[in-house]
Length: 314
Image (tube, rainbow, N blue to C red; front, side, top):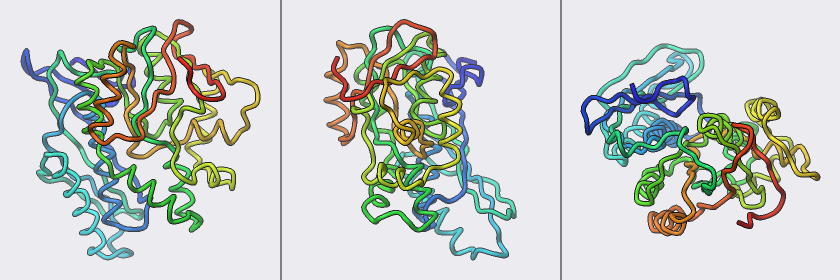
């Protein structure tokens, strides 16, 4: 066992040979968009992301389904499964089967098996003092999804969030590998602050980030100001309060946005300064155009984060 749940990493990793290790992960959730096919795509991309966060490639998947068969048509379930299958095929993996139950609330996701060379895997425990922090997708999907459920999200915000959530992290993972990145996590349910804090704690380091450097989805700020804040986002901020310090002047909305619970978010990478230009160039060549340098790893209380106002100035 190379990685297990003790470090709060994205997946388990088990060595099966000197040059081979299997990555094991699972994820599923309730619908966050109205279209069933798109929901299937998002749920599959989200589950596959854990494999990319560990530096691997997905191989095989099993469907996980809960469906209220007396309330929702099976045609809608078929659309969910097609969305998931198409996303898995895009990743170069295969769905081999799965399991379904009758459930009062629809749920869909995947169990995923991937593979990585043991010497080339990325973990959340390898960040070092001096590393630069790079985020590969804009955040705000939790806020937008909450507004979608209330019928309050404008078309441009829905489109931006859907595009982000249906984008695989395969290109970001390939870019990270080309730049020799060894520390990575994906930003999902615990938000940027939560997943960064877990990486810092596992690595025994601290960090500074600059709020103005963090990329945001179109319309997320206005929706947050209008009160479309997920319950999970509020819990994330409360949890992060013990380890996060803020420059003067941050209001609650700004703090909540940095703690927003994400679905199918990007990768958060810690990279040595000398490799940063190569990483950014590779990310952009893979189409990861929203990638941004948002801060740096430093010495300090393990897991602690200082959030600054304004743009990052290394």
